[in-house]
Structures are given as structure tokens and as C-alpha cells.
Length: 609
Image (cartoon, rainbow, N blue to C red; front, top):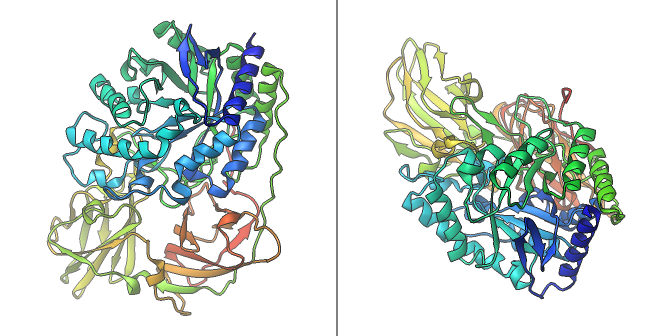
């Protein structure tokens, strides 16, 4: 019976794709999901459009079908679409509507998770940082200012995606209300406000299937009594989690909204992997029970640029790597892994159907990089500062990402203890441009000893936003820079020059052939051959310290010698035929700065499962 059920689901998904303009229905009845009135088992995989180069969306969708999936689940990331209040971007890599349309063309349905909070190991859980400028606005709450911003966002997003609801002939079969709210709070009025905003904005139709998602034990906190509740969990928790759900919601339907088939990495830790056989066996067990499952992640991809998130329990700080490989069935560059084969075989055994052939994957390559880099010192390329008698954060300067430099003048004196209250997140401290120490929020470092200065001196504090926390109530206080005070020997300087360094205008940098050490930009040229498709490659960052890399002015991501990530995925479609420009900003650059490419990802050693 289960085999027939899943086979019907796959055929219905293909039928919808073939008749994309015809309206359909997706509902719940008799404890099951119903597509056009027929039982439908959701076999979904999570994949996020900004983490996959647009040129590869169709390839990844075809691989999802080849694994046996009938649905793709994706978040919508508010911060990339509304970088400034009222300024929207749904173009290029941010074209979420086209992403959904392409999924439909490949025979896949879509589950949309518009948040507004998405977690996802993504910068501030998908919230735009400008929400933090008003310190009185309270994220994920019934605060009227927050609700108003959410309503405006949903109304604008609806213009993009509401034509793609299943009722309108599109592939969107369901929309999630908020995201794991039960792990955050229990304000059901807030959850009803999100539900209402989805409906009033037109993002959801009156008959759209809306649901909530939480850990099984948090369902009472985060669910709404009139909506289906799905559960999220990792390897080994399926039986207990579904038992809990059945106790709470015996009427069903029964679905894992996130089955964590891998895990993410923090800087300074090991790369995470999970046991393939154990994952596949548990996944097959769920399918044989008739449960619907959305695998998190089917393909993790890359948190390009500044978009990695971070974890914090209110005391610690754990920033995520740029790679979001997640040990998923498709690896970071979209290649099928042994986990892909294991899940594919499990689906085939349950459905009794042979999945489509697996599309071929082009291997990654390497390209030569000229070792003679030009350089530009940060000190020689500072913008005009803001004069202030107090410390300001990035948000105060309408800045979202990058770095911020605080400068003040010191009188001659014996030195003393520098104490920074509220460092977010990593600081290098200089006297007359000479590095005297670093402070790292990961290590709860707040002070260092400054040596005596025999004459008036310049104190510089260069602070990096290493990624805003995306989980727990810490998100409400994730402004970046120095949030509190800075004292030297108990004295608090009153005159500051503050430099906003968002790293968005590399063309303004003045490069020379002179060597550079310290916080420096390095410009390399990489040549690609003509006459053939440009293959993916990986920047080898082993020789670098800490900073950010850009390809043809587009931010690739972060590097840090603490690992575990020692390569940056460089997509072939982002390369130019002939000469490509790579710019590296290294906080502790060397005159001998070097860069090469390799044909594989390097995440350092992995511990046992």
C-alpha cells in the first residue's frame, strides 16, 4: 500500500508540472495529505536558492528527481531581498519566483518557508540587519513595529510568489508559519499574527495549506490548533519523535519537516559527518510508515559572501563557516555522494519505481593564479570617518556587513588594561598601526594589556562582523561592532573617528606593486582557457590568515586559518573567459601572500560519527 501511495504521489507531481496553468488542491483529510483528493506522501529535500548558483538550479532539481524526490523545500531570506527599508531585490541570484518556476518545470512541487524568521545557519536568521537599528524593536514578538515591518515584507513578497500557489496553477503546495517558534517562545498571539499576515498579504490563499514546524517536545509551544504540525529532528530520533507527535496530534498528518541528514560546521571545530547507513535505514523506516519527510539538507551549497550565521546560548559565540556542505546527499559543489545513492535506493525500494537517470556532473578543475599580486593597505584606503563622542555600531551607520574601524588619540602614558564591553565579534587592536593584540568573542575575550606610549599615539580597533547569531533570543541584540564601552585603565575616550567598511566598492581601492603587511587587500589574476565550458574550482586558502575573498568583485566568502574550511567554492558560471580578478582582504596579510586553486573541497580532518 505504501509503495502504491508514493508512486501515485510521483505521478501526480509530474502531472502538475505538465499542466502548470491548471489549478490544483492540496489539503489534509483522514490524517493524510491530499493532492487533488488523492493521498500524497511528500518526499522533499531542502535546498536554498541563494546557496546554489542560479546557473545550477535546474541541474540540482534534476538530481532531486533522480534521487526520487517529488518536492523541494526552501526558505525565503528577507535580508537579501530588502537590504534597506523599502528597497527590494528579486533579480539574478535572488529571483525566488524563477527558482520556484524551474522546480515546477522539472516536475517538483515546492514547500515555501517565508519565515519571517528562518534560522538556517543564515545571517540573523534571515532578518535584515536594519531592524536592529531601532533598539526598541523586538524581533519575533507581537511588538507593533516588528509586526508592521513583517506585514510590509510579506505584502511585497506576495507579488512574487502568490501566482505560484497550487491554487493558481503553480507548484507551491504548502507554506510554513514562522519557524520552530516553540524553541524560542510560547506567544500564540504572535503565531496567530504571522498566520494572519500570510493570509492578509496574499502570500497565502484562504485555502492554502499552512502548517507549523517544531521539535516534537516543542509542538505545544509553537503550533496552532487549527493547523497541521510537523516535527524536526536528527538521526536516531525518528521513532520517539513520531510517537510524541502522535500523542499530541493523533489525527495527523504525520511529517518530518526537517530530517537532519547531516550537520553544519563552526569555525575552529571539526567538519561534521553522519553515518550513511544509519541515515538511510531510518529514512526508509519513515517512508514505510507512510510518513512524509523533508530531508534537511538535500543540497546545502554555500553561504556566499557574508551570509553565514552563528550560534549562541547567550554566553558563547560559534560562527558558521562559509561552506554549508552539511554532509548532504549532494556535496557543496553539487556532486552526488554515497549518501545520495543510499537514499535513492531506499526510495526505490519503498516506491517500487526506478528513478530517472542521474544527470552527469562535470568535474572541478584548477586554474593558474599569477603569484605576483598587487596590494593595497587598509590604512591607505580608509573612507571619510564619522566623528562621534560615543561608540556607534554598524547599524547606527546603516551598515550590514564587513568591518568597522574605531580610532581615537591617546596622550603619552604608562599604558594599561584595554577593556571592551560588547565586542561583536573579532577585533584587532593597534597602536600607531602596530598590532598589539586580538580579541575574539568566541573565546569570551574582553581585555588586553596595552604597553606604555612615550608620545601621543593613535589607537585603532578594527572589528569584524563574523556573522550574526541566527538562533535563540540573542538575535535581538546582534548589532555589530562595539555595543557597549571601551576603557583604557578605567578611562573612557570621548572623541572617536569611526570608519564604516562594508567592502562593497573594491574599485575605489588604490593597488600598487609594493608589498603589504597587516590588514591588506591583495589583487590576483587568474586565467581560464577558452574553447571549453568553465569548470568549478576551489580557492586554496591554507596560506591565508583571516578575512574575505572576492571573485570579479562578487564576495565568495570567508577564510580563517583555524579551519575546518580551507577552500572556497568558486562556481564555474561566475568565472570569465580569460582574465578573472580575485581580491583577498586578509587581516594579518603577509608580503608573501599566495593563492592557488584545487579541484576539491578541503574541510580538514573529520572525527568519527
